[in-house]
Image (cartoon, rainbow, N blue to C red; front, side):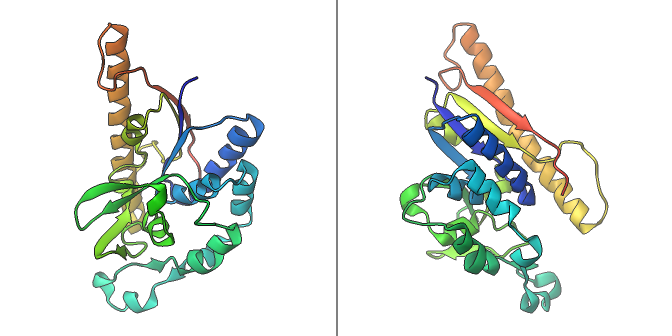
Length: 246
Protein backbone atom coordinates (compact mmCIF):
# COMPACT_ATOMS: atom_id res chain seq x y z
CA UNK A 1 0.00 0.00 0.00
CA UNK A 2 1.30 3.48 -0.82
CA UNK A 3 2.02 5.81 2.05
CA UNK A 4 -0.41 8.72 1.79
CA UNK A 5 0.19 12.24 3.02
CA UNK A 6 -2.66 14.72 3.48
CA UNK A 7 -1.42 18.15 2.39
CA UNK A 8 -3.52 20.99 3.80
CA UNK A 9 -2.33 24.12 2.01
CA UNK A 10 -2.91 27.57 3.46
CA UNK A 11 -5.81 29.66 2.25
CA UNK A 12 -7.26 31.93 4.94
CA UNK A 13 -11.02 31.57 5.29
CA UNK A 14 -10.98 29.27 2.26
CA UNK A 15 -10.04 26.49 4.64
CA UNK A 16 -13.77 26.17 5.33
CA UNK A 17 -13.99 24.73 1.80
CA UNK A 18 -11.05 22.51 2.68
CA UNK A 19 -13.00 21.20 5.68
CA UNK A 20 -15.83 20.22 3.35
CA UNK A 21 -13.37 18.23 1.25
CA UNK A 22 -12.19 16.47 4.40
CA UNK A 23 -15.78 15.47 5.14
CA UNK A 24 -15.94 13.75 1.74
CA UNK A 25 -12.45 12.21 1.76
CA UNK A 26 -12.41 11.03 5.37
CA UNK A 27 -16.04 10.15 6.10
CA UNK A 28 -17.69 9.39 2.78
CA UNK A 29 -14.76 7.92 0.82
CA UNK A 30 -13.04 6.45 3.89
CA UNK A 31 -9.56 7.46 2.75
CA UNK A 32 -6.85 6.97 5.39
CA UNK A 33 -3.63 8.94 5.64
CA UNK A 34 -0.28 8.00 7.17
CA UNK A 35 0.94 11.57 7.56
CA UNK A 36 -0.57 15.04 7.43
CA UNK A 37 0.95 18.47 6.99
CA UNK A 38 -0.64 21.89 7.32
CA UNK A 39 0.40 25.46 6.59
CA UNK A 40 -1.15 28.75 7.69
CA UNK A 41 -4.82 28.66 8.75
CA UNK A 42 -5.08 25.10 7.42
CA UNK A 43 -3.28 24.05 10.60
CA UNK A 44 -6.58 24.61 12.43
CA UNK A 45 -8.16 21.85 10.33
CA UNK A 46 -5.10 19.70 10.90
CA UNK A 47 -5.29 20.19 14.66
CA UNK A 48 -8.89 18.96 14.69
CA UNK A 49 -8.15 15.98 12.46
CA UNK A 50 -5.08 14.72 14.28
CA UNK A 51 -6.89 14.63 17.61
CA UNK A 52 -9.45 12.27 16.12
CA UNK A 53 -12.29 14.46 14.89
CA UNK A 54 -14.19 13.24 11.83
CA UNK A 55 -14.36 15.17 8.58
CA UNK A 56 -17.97 16.05 9.36
CA UNK A 57 -17.03 17.40 12.79
CA UNK A 58 -14.31 19.54 11.23
CA UNK A 59 -16.70 20.85 8.58
CA UNK A 60 -19.37 21.54 11.21
CA UNK A 61 -16.87 23.61 13.19
CA UNK A 62 -16.62 25.96 10.22
CA UNK A 63 -20.34 25.87 9.49
CA UNK A 64 -20.85 27.26 12.99
CA UNK A 65 -17.96 29.71 12.64
CA UNK A 66 -18.74 33.44 12.74
CA UNK A 67 -15.95 35.35 10.95
CA UNK A 68 -16.92 38.74 12.39
CA UNK A 69 -16.41 37.51 15.94
CA UNK A 70 -13.22 35.60 15.13
CA UNK A 71 -10.75 38.47 14.95
CA UNK A 72 -10.29 41.54 17.06
CA UNK A 73 -8.91 44.83 15.78
CA UNK A 74 -5.53 45.63 17.31
CA UNK A 75 -6.60 49.16 18.28
CA UNK A 76 -3.57 50.15 20.34
CA UNK A 77 -1.22 49.11 17.58
CA UNK A 78 -3.19 51.04 14.96
CA UNK A 79 -2.31 54.23 16.82
CA UNK A 80 1.27 53.60 15.68
CA UNK A 81 0.08 53.94 12.06
CA UNK A 82 2.79 52.64 9.69
CA UNK A 83 4.69 51.10 12.63
CA UNK A 84 1.73 49.07 13.87
CA UNK A 85 2.49 45.48 14.82
CA UNK A 86 -0.63 44.17 13.07
CA UNK A 87 -4.18 45.05 12.06
CA UNK A 88 -5.86 42.27 14.05
CA UNK A 89 -5.34 39.89 16.97
CA UNK A 90 -6.00 36.17 17.36
CA UNK A 91 -7.34 36.48 20.92
CA UNK A 92 -10.83 35.26 19.97
CA UNK A 93 -9.41 32.02 18.60
CA UNK A 94 -7.49 31.37 21.80
CA UNK A 95 -10.36 32.21 24.15
CA UNK A 96 -13.44 31.18 22.16
CA UNK A 97 -12.96 29.02 19.10
CA UNK A 98 -10.21 26.64 20.22
CA UNK A 99 -12.23 25.68 23.33
CA UNK A 100 -15.47 25.47 21.29
CA UNK A 101 -13.78 23.15 18.80
CA UNK A 102 -12.61 21.01 21.70
CA UNK A 103 -8.91 21.17 20.90
CA UNK A 104 -7.06 18.84 23.25
CA UNK A 105 -3.30 19.40 23.28
CA UNK A 106 -2.70 15.96 24.79
CA UNK A 107 -4.37 14.30 21.80
CA UNK A 108 -3.10 16.49 19.00
CA UNK A 109 -0.65 14.78 16.66
CA UNK A 110 0.50 15.99 13.25
CA UNK A 111 3.00 18.18 11.46
CA UNK A 112 2.59 21.93 11.14
CA UNK A 113 4.88 24.60 9.81
CA UNK A 114 5.94 27.95 11.18
CA UNK A 115 8.64 30.31 9.98
CA UNK A 116 11.31 31.27 12.50
CA UNK A 117 11.89 34.86 11.44
CA UNK A 118 14.71 35.33 13.95
CA UNK A 119 16.74 32.49 12.39
CA UNK A 120 15.22 32.76 8.88
CA UNK A 121 14.34 29.07 8.65
CA UNK A 122 11.21 27.02 8.00
CA UNK A 123 10.35 24.93 11.06
CA UNK A 124 8.07 21.89 10.83
CA UNK A 125 6.63 21.50 14.34
CA UNK A 126 6.39 17.88 15.45
CA UNK A 127 3.85 16.44 17.92
CA UNK A 128 5.91 16.66 21.13
CA UNK A 129 6.54 20.36 20.45
CA UNK A 130 2.97 21.42 19.63
CA UNK A 131 1.45 24.11 21.83
CA UNK A 132 -1.30 26.69 21.47
CA UNK A 133 1.38 29.33 20.80
CA UNK A 134 2.84 27.35 17.91
CA UNK A 135 -0.62 26.76 16.44
CA UNK A 136 -1.36 30.49 16.56
CA UNK A 137 2.08 31.27 15.13
CA UNK A 138 1.47 28.94 12.19
CA UNK A 139 -1.44 31.18 11.10
CA UNK A 140 0.04 34.57 12.06
CA UNK A 141 0.15 36.17 8.62
CA UNK A 142 2.37 39.30 8.71
CA UNK A 143 0.57 42.66 8.71
CA UNK A 144 -2.76 41.00 9.53
CA UNK A 145 -1.76 39.29 12.78
CA UNK A 146 1.13 39.84 15.21
CA UNK A 147 4.08 37.45 15.28
CA UNK A 148 4.37 35.05 18.20
CA UNK A 149 7.49 35.01 20.35
CA UNK A 150 8.48 31.61 21.68
CA UNK A 151 11.65 31.00 23.70
CA UNK A 152 13.13 34.29 22.53
CA UNK A 153 12.52 33.72 18.81
CA UNK A 154 9.91 35.35 16.58
CA UNK A 155 7.60 33.05 14.59
CA UNK A 156 5.22 33.87 11.74
CA UNK A 157 3.00 32.08 9.23
CA UNK A 158 5.15 29.92 6.93
CA UNK A 159 2.99 30.55 3.89
CA UNK A 160 5.38 33.00 2.19
CA UNK A 161 8.07 30.31 2.42
CA UNK A 162 5.81 27.39 1.51
CA UNK A 163 2.06 26.98 1.15
CA UNK A 164 2.40 23.19 1.25
CA UNK A 165 5.54 21.58 2.65
CA UNK A 166 5.71 18.80 0.10
CA UNK A 167 9.43 18.20 0.57
CA UNK A 168 8.87 17.38 4.24
CA UNK A 169 6.10 14.91 3.39
CA UNK A 170 8.35 13.17 0.86
CA UNK A 171 11.19 13.13 3.39
CA UNK A 172 8.84 11.35 5.79
CA UNK A 173 8.18 8.63 3.24
CA UNK A 174 5.02 9.73 1.42
CA UNK A 175 4.36 8.07 -1.94
CA UNK A 176 1.04 9.84 -2.57
CA UNK A 177 0.41 13.51 -1.86
CA UNK A 178 -3.27 14.41 -1.51
CA UNK A 179 -3.32 18.18 -1.91
CA UNK A 180 -6.26 20.52 -1.33
CA UNK A 181 -5.30 23.75 -3.13
CA UNK A 182 -7.49 26.86 -2.90
CA UNK A 183 -5.05 29.68 -3.65
CA UNK A 184 -6.33 31.48 -6.73
CA UNK A 185 -4.37 30.94 -9.93
CA UNK A 186 -6.52 33.14 -12.19
CA UNK A 187 -3.78 35.75 -12.38
CA UNK A 188 -6.16 38.67 -11.90
CA UNK A 189 -4.39 41.66 -10.32
CA UNK A 190 -6.48 43.82 -7.99
CA UNK A 191 -5.72 47.40 -6.98
CA UNK A 192 -5.55 48.65 -3.42
CA UNK A 193 -3.68 47.43 -0.35
CA UNK A 194 -5.70 44.22 0.12
CA UNK A 195 -5.65 43.38 -3.59
CA UNK A 196 -1.91 44.02 -3.83
CA UNK A 197 -1.16 41.99 -0.70
CA UNK A 198 -3.00 38.92 -1.90
CA UNK A 199 -1.59 39.32 -5.39
CA UNK A 200 1.88 38.98 -3.84
CA UNK A 201 0.58 36.05 -1.79
CA UNK A 202 -0.71 34.26 -4.90
CA UNK A 203 2.49 34.86 -6.87
CA UNK A 204 4.64 33.53 -4.03
CA UNK A 205 2.60 30.47 -3.13
CA UNK A 206 1.66 29.38 -6.65
CA UNK A 207 5.22 29.88 -7.85
CA UNK A 208 6.70 27.80 -5.05
CA UNK A 209 4.11 25.07 -5.49
CA UNK A 210 4.69 24.83 -9.24
CA UNK A 211 8.45 24.56 -8.71
CA UNK A 212 8.00 21.58 -6.39
CA UNK A 213 5.56 19.93 -8.81
CA UNK A 214 8.11 20.37 -11.60
CA UNK A 215 10.72 18.61 -9.46
CA UNK A 216 8.31 15.74 -8.87
CA UNK A 217 7.63 15.46 -12.62
CA UNK A 218 11.38 15.40 -13.29
CA UNK A 219 11.86 12.78 -10.58
CA UNK A 220 9.15 10.53 -12.02
CA UNK A 221 10.50 10.93 -15.56
CA UNK A 222 13.98 9.93 -14.36
CA UNK A 223 12.60 6.83 -12.64
CA UNK A 224 10.77 5.83 -15.83
CA UNK A 225 14.15 6.01 -17.60
CA UNK A 226 15.65 3.65 -15.04
CA UNK A 227 17.40 6.28 -12.94
CA UNK A 228 17.00 6.94 -9.22
CA UNK A 229 15.50 10.43 -9.51
CA UNK A 230 15.75 13.20 -6.93
CA UNK A 231 13.42 11.48 -4.45
CA UNK A 232 14.39 7.87 -5.10
CA UNK A 233 10.86 6.65 -5.82
CA UNK A 234 7.81 7.60 -7.84
CA UNK A 235 5.69 10.33 -6.21
CA UNK A 236 2.00 10.63 -7.11
CA UNK A 237 0.20 13.95 -6.63
CA UNK A 238 -3.57 13.81 -6.24
CA UNK A 239 -4.67 17.41 -6.30
CA UNK A 240 -8.08 18.92 -5.69
CA UNK A 241 -7.91 22.53 -6.86
CA UNK A 242 -10.73 25.06 -6.64
CA UNK A 243 -11.18 28.81 -7.12
CA UNK A 244 -13.01 29.44 -3.87
CA UNK A 245 -14.73 32.80 -3.55
CA UNK A 246 -14.68 34.53 -0.16
